[in-house]
Length: 352
Ligand code: ADP
Image (cartoon, rainbow, N blue to C red; front, side, top):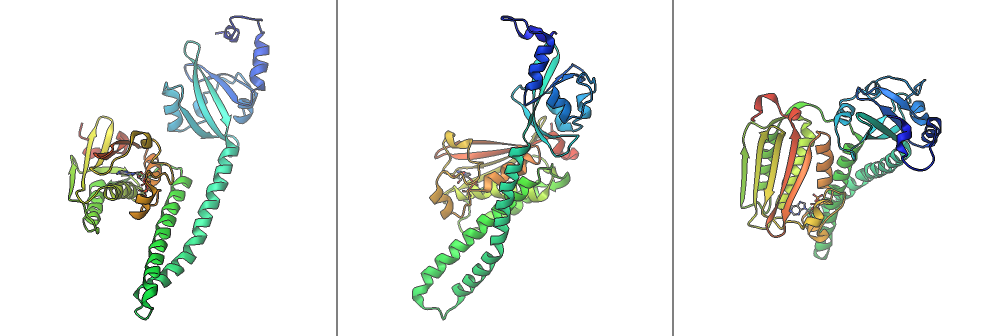
């Protein structure tokens, strides 16, 4: 296909003029054929990938040799984008987009996102350092407060303020500890390990803690259709399960019923955690995994929530290429479904 056919009306531009226009773009533009060979690249793309010739004919996969990139190349969603690092400078970050072009060709658009990524890193590093700095003094302060709670010689009129202090210092400790987990998950954007994790064992341990809580649920059912062994990072899986089940407990009343079901199908493994609690309006569902997004701040705080639990769940799932679906109805309850891809299911337990 000639580049000229982009323009059906108006003046006819020469191919050179069109290339000149594409070379003037701030984005990198790479035209690739059906075999992923580079047909042509503009000035920025050639520079970023260190291509000596704009008609290089090299296979684009050689520049981004990851399975994520392979998946990205073979998908057909025009809105899909992928973050990738420059194979040449190793310090330039791109957002990649793929646009179908001609009969079988594609345009790969590379946008330099190094600056926003660096700014984001400075911001999260600052917040992570601040949280670390706060941890030691807070441990000392809460240690003394705990001693004061126990101290019988302290005048009675100080009892209530000291109890309030103890409650608030506990809250600060929970927020700090969740923040540190979140920063760690954010900074380790790498894939989770593939060790065999006993999901059922984790669920049973969290259930035991729940039943020992001050206000345990009336009913807690666990149904695993197989042993529930998955390939992942145990600490992160534990954090996913704990956060969702703790929420189920937190947002139920005394007649709370929680059910946890695990099953596998051709798509992978699915962990459904359902409660009959207060539920959520549809408009909140998309936002509850944002940091500090709480529908009812007062209730969340009162119940010991930090507003970070589901953000932690989201990052921990992402590291396992897993997704989260939330279904909920006000006054009826909520269901959180974590779906793990088939390659994360331990071979022996696939049940399709
Ligand atoms: P929190 O520590 O406040 O529970 P999360 O990030 O875990 O923070 O959840 C964010 C918000 O989503 C909560 O404040 C609550 O409003 C809502 N939420 C989460 N889980 C449930 C649930 N099972 N039932 C009802 N609302 C929920």
